Length: 303
Figure 1 (cartoon, one colour):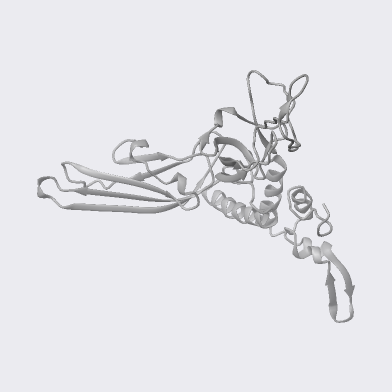
Figure 2 (tube, helix red, strand yellow):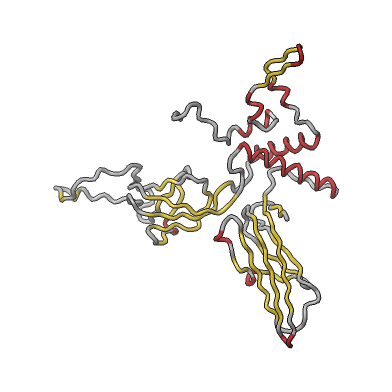
């Protein structure tokens, strides 16, 4: 079952209905939610489940794009009554790329199918897509005042240094490509971008020398947990998805004709440009996605 995630901050929810013929007496209800991609999100959620009217229950999920399996089981042994009931369902939480406008039931169903196909086409060009997930990475200090992060983190939940929690002292660098430590007594201090020269320590005429301290010592072990990906769907990606949805719904995926490089009337021999097999079928969308694709290296080994 697909659950469409809406605006940021509005958490997706799972609702399920218990059977109406439950026997009276003490009942043991177990609700287990398993995330298929991120084990840290696996939890027994009975304490965070909201009971609605009747036998309906609702589970609030994190505002992330993941797939889940819900297992609900009930057992009853009061008054010597043996009773067992189980419920199992899979859910896929996704955030559509396109702009949804509600219509009739058949129009809504057709739009969701076409948007799912358009999103798959975009994801085939932009590796990783435009999703929001949680991740833990391991990094090693390089002896500077910056700790580089290669993943697109937009929120940090936990950072440990050799097992010690240092989250409170961690901030993003201005371009969000690295982590820094912040100190209230030295908020504007000069930070070292390269490892300092190591020389034997000693005492000079003015001050000691050779004692260099950096925020992220070489060889120190760091674990970083946080949300990464895209906090918002970029506006141009929404436009690209809307263009593809329109093309799919109208049967206008005939942009291959623009890639014809040679056309011979003798027995209709047609030659296409190789780019036809690497795009989305829409030249405008290809231009938009080029800003996000990973094929910007012209020659191997040359950036």
